[in-house]
Image 1 (cartoon, rainbow, N blue to C red):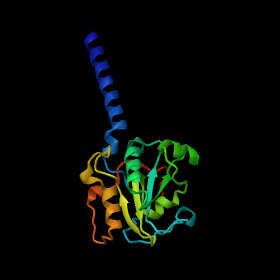
Image 2: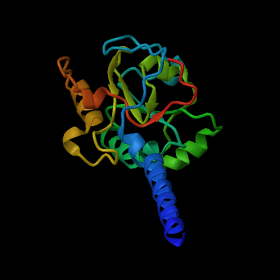
Image 3: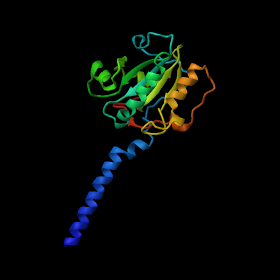
Image 4: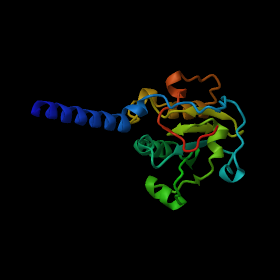
Length: 198
């Protein structure tokens, strides 16, 4: 009887540990399920974004899709900040908040430690074909989508060889129209968008 009780407890503990591992790690290493009504947006497509979000057309616009409740988005903050510091003079940056919770612009800016524009418009994600966070949408000076995809193959954004966001920026800044990205760059990973209908 005692042996059965101990085995039962061990099985229960293993199940709990497995569930926690799934919740905190494994589920984010699998591709994000594509929403049922998803409409892909191809590179080169003109993206309609409210003019108040994209005023300076002299530089490309880098949109960072961020959900403060998503662990993957939180792990990505350091990488995003490094990209902003490196390319600030050549690219405009904005943070697009994808959350059902209410946040103010200053709360988001404090999370990043940067005074960047913050967009609270979920239609921006649909216009760019984004359905998970963290994601990048890079828009050229003619409002055309140049890149929509992941920052990196690594959840912790540590692999410079697959720093897709930087590769995209460098390609756009050098007018490389032949730059192509593999499935790892374009398959969405991370957290589904809240109320994703695109």
